[in-house]
Amino acid sequence: MIKYNLKCKNKHEFESWFSDSKEFDRLKRKNLIECIFCQSKKWKSQ
Ligand SMILES: [Zn+2]
Image 1 (cartoon, rainbow, N blue to C red):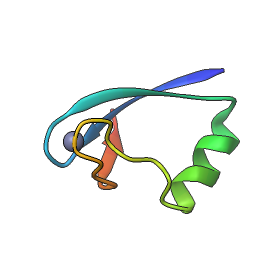
Image 2: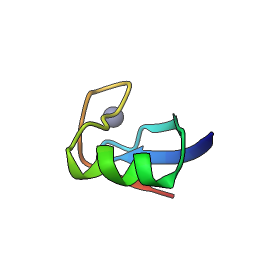
Image 3: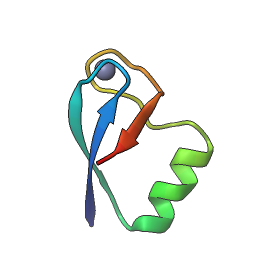
Image 4: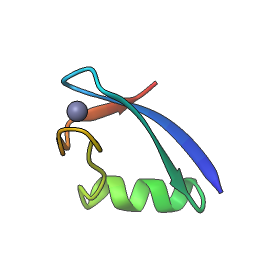
């Protein structure tokens, strides 16, 4: 498992766990990762 620290465009910081970086890339490409606070799909890893 790998953890990513993400920050959405509304400056919410949240963590997400993925089995590996490939899964992260896959979900990211499909736009399936969203902020847990505002459900924004615009975020970046920090
Ligand atoms: Zn947010």
